[in-house]
Image 1 (cartoon, rainbow, N blue to C red):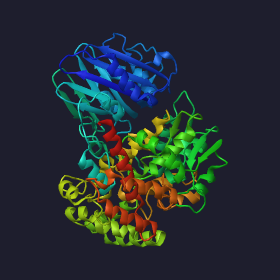
Image 2: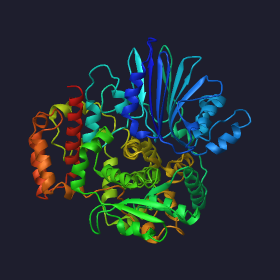
Image 3: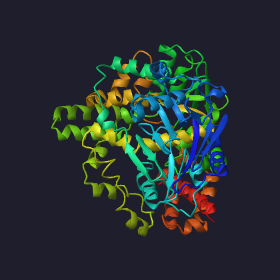
Image 4: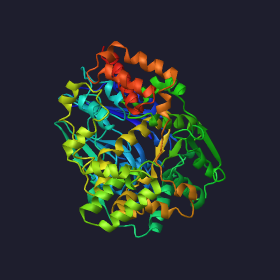
Length: 610
């Protein structure tokens, strides 16, 4: 895992080392172990290395092939690099044990088609010194980030926005459409835009070719076209997940696991300890105390006799306030809840003990882990008149959950898109009316994320429009502490196989993640297999925001001149809503957090360009 930066001058102006070094300094935390810089007239490349595989200087980047024609800088891991190296060994002379060298020679051997051979997470740039072309590539699902800025004179890219911002030559403000989707839909990163107007991200499953004349963008991976019926049983799923975990453990440094107590991370721990027999496992968790919202300690402790050592941290409102400036700087863009802060503290806890962490991210997206997926499934059953199955599923859901949430989701999904958009405004009358009127017509989310006619389409939409912001938060949190985070459930072989399943293999008898529950029957504790709640990285933020120390902080922000003059929210309505929250009339902790996080980000933006 590393930090990449680069600059390409279209008008053939020389790129100065000082420009690249400023960018490298901004992403130093991503790779504190080593660094390298390459300049070739109008091109500059920089790399900050976090040494994971082959810790010797042979792994230093930028890295060249034997002919010195191609130069690569790479961020990520190719987990099947050993197998690919065996294919290439007879034609190329390898001088390191790194996966980066395998990527380089794979590109030389197979061109852009090499990407489909990779199992892993990656963002890399390859510069052809003969043609002057620069290739930028991003993995299938957007696990690894890559941002860019482009004008008529320059193309600039980096692993993080702060790297790009070192070179932006003129004033760029906030992207109001992104802010609208953040405030109304709790979504970011669903399109190529960022909160910074003028800074974009290379889309997941895309590559760009930069030449002396232009930039071309291409989609090399489209998930709907790659779905294959490879899983015939829950045993097939178990075997494939175990193989994914096995190759995700390839590392020359210590590996641990983020353990939440949920089914996804528990399955990874169970595979590591029960199938792969890893007896030196460290786990890292956030806990809050029995009975506190967000606490999963009772489920985490079920693995107490299976792992070498459990590490736990307890985030509080006071630690949040102490860390707030650092957390905002870490994330660089507003986040939708304080949940990522809990992950931030877990990563801080892991630093110094391990250098690589496995995590259960992605399980909810491929296995229907969010309860609104029940609504998508019910809509599909009604659409195709599977009325008996619908009635059975409704009965089992209510019996197991004692909740109407799934039925409310079904009713919402049946609404016209225009009504769905309006429905999302319920409880958000704090928006500035002119801001709403200006931006409501620009959003496309109601017609994408919330308009799936089947469970599979809903899962696909979440891969396209929702998953990436979760991956971004995890990347920022882990890399802030110079840790590599790996997500074995997002092995594309698993994703493509699961999405080819019949929907009743995913949701069945009122339970989601059905195939995973069946696959893990013999190795995951029954208490976890029977869980029906969804927690993940969650904090008791509703109570946090009622504590006096946070009240003082919020009031100071709300009475500031910048908040009172905000073009996005009506501060008077925000004050009234916060008062209702304090008096326990309502719970709007997520909205309160978004007001605060957005205001802090806007203040940082103003300071940058003041």
